[in-house]
Image (cartoon, rainbow, N blue to C red; front, side, top):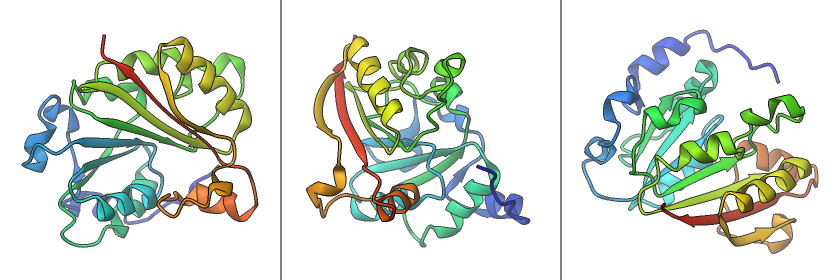
Length: 211
């Protein structure tokens, strides 16, 4: 999907106190950034930020980091953050480099409506492929914990198999999240969109002991 260019994106990003310019400098020391020992949750591909901002507002005892690789989308997300939200930071990053930024310090990874990369030759780009699961091993703290939501049935089926083959245990699994009427469920922009279209929303939560 082609993204709308934000003309003043560079100024928005540069002037935001929530943006971390050089995230690799904090590898292994992200709790110093937040100045506390609270758990750190990461959303890979946060889009315009609705999901992670609402989580940060609701769960003040958890630190959140949003990852986005496109400047225009990152700028839109930064503009949405209210003042004095001390438990939220955002970084510009291609997820393929995630293990250059974090080391044994992340509690939970969220994968919300990730690009399905449907062609077989692009399998390694899927965020639940062996290629990425291996990288996540280096960023998690006490155990590997991933929560994924998508409207793409094929990606979901692929992810269940991939996660299982990699040694993850399923904690929760649903093929129609909306049918549960979960009042605690926080939606991303894409989830809101697909829910209005009555598309089924698939969700899986998995964990794996550290090697």
